[in-house]
Length: 284
Image 1 (cartoon, rainbow, N blue to C red):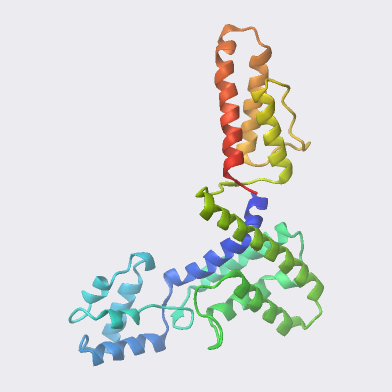
Image 2: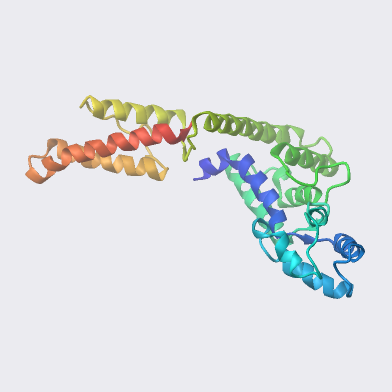
């Protein structure tokens, strides 16, 4: 599980950061700007306090489910689409939930520690917290939404340099280079999905792929099935299930019991189907 999460870390981090805007609320300055706009457009003629209550109700709705009609019902009359576009929040105009930010910090710290096997100061919760604060409170020359992994790395590098100078450059570059390599792999997989339409549902090492191919060939030709190549056995659930099915198949191959013989072809077909699914759906 850790290996699969680590492989997907760059994409998962992007998703988690951008998802912070799902529950963001307007900053006081943004709320007042919306209030003045609605006043000017004749959409609102009561106090700012009451308008703030309407905004709170609107932004309590999940971002993906918000509609112009929701806010229209809270105003004196429906607004134009041009005014409604102003209700869109980014990291410069929205306040994100601090608890959600710290959840990302904790998740990223633990996955970096386990995935890269390091306790370097550059992955400390303090460093990652400062990095996310920079991203979620961007200066005017930085992006305020649609954050990608390179944006995170740039903010992370600035944070590390501001705290330590070049003291931890070697450690930082080692981690970033590995993560950027993973990001390149993810982009290649995404391109492959666009071409084939097949979405990877499991990440296999080359050793695991080679073994699965060998199992498929052995069962197809009714030859001896190779053992799993690692002494500790498989760690991924679908490979564990395959090994168990292979063990059952070996029993029915040698058993003279009538009921077992009847199940032989069904189990053989199951193994072949599972091998084919793994090879078809895995990311390479």
